[in-house]
Image (cartoon, rainbow, N blue to C red; front, side, top):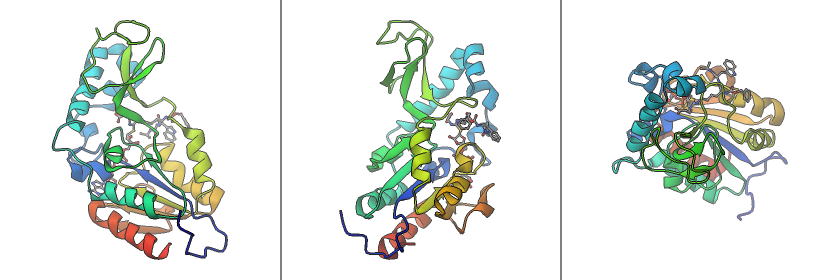
Length: 247
Ligand code: BV8
């Protein structure tokens, strides 16, 4: 591990990066709230809540099957923004944690290791009877059997629906309270608790906060620094700067 060349007066050199659907847009994956976004085509209440799954398991499973197939399509690859975060993780002397709201596997595909999927992963499924979680690249339907308890029709996408508790919140809050830099990339800042992380990092760690997005997010005024443009352009440029001279 390289010695930290930048004298920060003892301030933490740990970095927390929050990503949203915007970082995967240029890889060909839809966002949620843009003009052609997912939530303009289907209602959250019909596909992304536990009630919807009880009411219409066939419809909900079909929705996630289609998104899983989409993410696994040959032409969907990690882009320069994903790659830049891997470079930061490998070359920055301090800890770098990527907290993604995305359920795609593009951060892994790029090589990110210190990574939290706070809203779950499309390529994982969970049994509602025994809570067993397995990797899955195939379609689910109401006749799918659980490999662990053999129950039928109990498999659901291992994603966090609205009204459900996000994953790894303790690890995330611990990292936010000890970071020196918090960066938010490609997210509209519409969904909580993720949208509250910038305030958490400022309040508990007095961290420097940066928004990298195509346009101002709902929480843009909460960030000390803001840069706008396509992620594949502004993220590599920002990472180059941090590796060259810190923040
Ligand atoms: C919970 C997984 C209890 C499933 C998702 C406080 C106030 C108000 C409401 C609440 C609150 N606290 C809780 C709530 C309720 C709710 C909520 O926030 N509702 C909102 C709608 C008001 N939150 C919950 O229910 C959460 N659970 O709160 O549990 C609790 C409370 C406290 C502490 C612990 C627990 C659970 C929410 C999780 C839902 N699941 N995804 C799936 O994928 O199907 S949310 C989903 O939408 C994403 O994961 C993401 O989190 C969210 C927003 O999406 P974004 O990623 O931001 O995408 P979006 O399209 O909105 O924006 C894209 C951005 O990218 C844009 O700004 C655009 O400009 C930019 N962009 C586009 N192209 C590019 C680009 N940027 C750069 N380059 C480009 N090329």
